[in-house]
Amino acid sequence: MKLTRIAALSSSLLLGAVLTLTGASTAQADESAALDYVALGDSYSSGLGAGSYGDSGSCKRSGVAYPQLWANANSPSSFAFTACSGARTGDVTGSQLGPVNSGTDLVSLTVGGNDAGFADVMLTCVLQSEANCVSRVNQARGYVDTTLPGQLDSVYNAISARAPSAKVVVIGYPRFYQLNGSCVVGLTETERSAINGAADHLNSLLAKRAADHGYSYADVTGPFTGHEICSSSSWLHSVSVPNLGESYHPTAQGQSGGYLPAFSSAV
Image 1 (cartoon, rainbow, N blue to C red):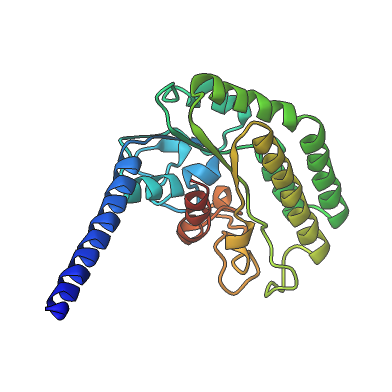
Image 2: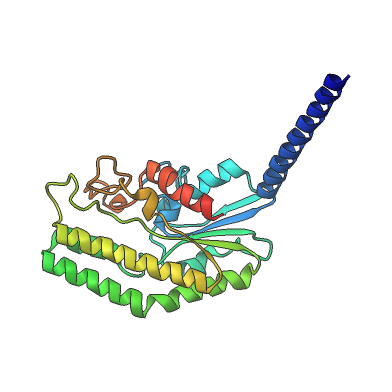
């Protein structure tokens, strides 16, 4: 009799646990499904370098960029992908905020690198002397200190005005080089170190400004560690003359293995 009661009790407890877990899973699924998600920003959000651009033209929105991968996995109730390669802060406020409104629950954003002139920094470092490279890097760092903060505030204020209840995730940029890595030609270690330092400097500003506005910040330097240019398993394109625009941008694996988990954790 006791054994029968114990078995019945165990079955009830097990059934209750299953129902509880099932209810939690259902609630999580319902929560994701109820989200209205908008992905804003520059080429690191659009997915330049990852391929599969479809009919997005010069915006280079990839079907394997982290916003699309997250939407595929979570099935939000709506998903608007307006990030565009080459975008600066003014482009985000001027042409990307259309889908952002009071019903928006989640916004992702990478922006600031183009404003600071990082593409020109890379071009200078590849084509000119070490001294010119370091000078151009320092010029970009000065822009990050003096001008970019106000530009970021304008973007963040515009997002908050349109979607005051949205969770906003600002995502940073990777370090580009593994120092003392496998590269035997190309930039000097001094140039590589200067470029990495500038990326860290920009990320520090992004993190601070995001926090000042009550936003979350997703750091991708951790996931990309060991996968920089000059590593044995790079998730970033090095300089490629046929596809110069994709240089220093994440590959498809960089989007799925670097940006996606950083964004998912922040969400």
